[in-house]
Image (cartoon, rainbow, N blue to C red; front, side, top):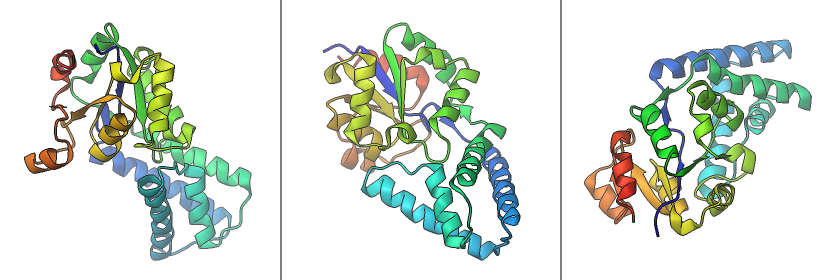
Length: 247
């Protein structure tokens, strides 16, 4: 069956962060949280704050890896504040979470080489979508990155985990994308960098999958053991040809 629709992961497939950007965001978030805690008469030690975030990370990884459930930033903030014994209203926590998410805007991620030129070309031939697990940068912010780079208009629909409540490899996110793109599973390909989430999720939904190895690297042994038979591409410049070969 010919390919009619192509979906993409976001992080490490379309965009990546630089170490400098991560440091800028981390400083902005530390200041934001520190100011909030001081307003509520709390000044935890670095060790206490680290322990609180560790608790939130444990919840995140359990939900993401074991239960395929999203963990919104507001819930993450609630875990941290509750661990520190900070009393605050739901409105205050929601405002803090929104500001925390917006810290990503102070240091945007970078497009991966070849994306800017390749996506418009592909949009002329295929219906495009995005299926992304969002972490601490929600879909509303990721759309702003895409819009700023002139790419959002090329994607008919974006499926973000903070908006669906589910994370990859849950088939629901892939099925939702197929419905919104008006495509059957057999005529769609998902492009992503993680075998567990992108490749396994697409396959479970009946889609074909293409592993992007331009940023996330795998050994030959890993590819043979975990992605046997799944085509891989290491450059966006080679992506059109790789998709044409998937008859």
